Image (cartoon, rainbow, N blue to C red; front, side, top):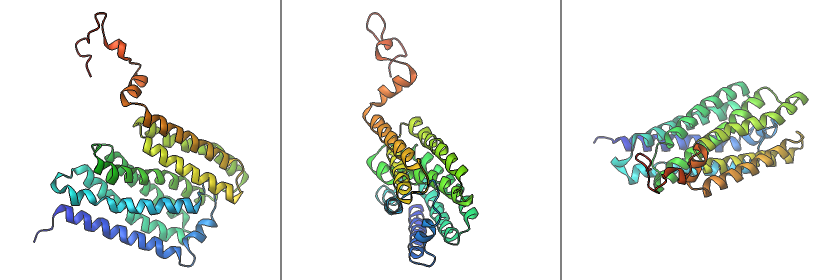
Length: 273
């Protein structure tokens, strides 16, 4: 009996996801535990662990949902979906290695792995942009890819801040400026692809940073900047969701509907969209 391509990807996805989740869960209760190491390595980009834990739990559920198109659509699944699932398998393998290095406080290795996680997450996100906006694709491929990509940006910044032991006064001041640069990194794909969902995700992550910084009271002003950015990201999400695509495109290109018509009120040749 020949194993289909869909079956291979489903088995690989569930296996990598199961090992990744088991590794994460096991090190929550091990010694030293993952929360203990995380709490003792607070940086200016330390996020509230409850909000972060909720985010990761939802992320795992959406990872599992990626197999739904393979079960429902069968031969109709395109190569972009297979590429996303293939990248998700590698992502979960990298998560296993990241957890193992982090709890052992090998922070330079963790920082290096964070770059590989970002690269894999970026592949997932870029491939998801090529999928059609069907309900199944939106819920099982596009949104999970946005979740993974959004968190990967934060984790790169956090992992490197831990690796360089960013706790000095100079690093704290620099972080108050650098957090705005991180916001720009999020805004690039958000505005470039009119991605209101990624904007909401980034708003949540900056909110988690704000709550985390507020509770640890180590880095002045950082929680204020994080909450401001979170509010701005929420505003961008609302605007991008409510404004029609044609109106957004017209505002970006400088076109307007009346210009498409000539004096006689007809549409010139080549002017129809």
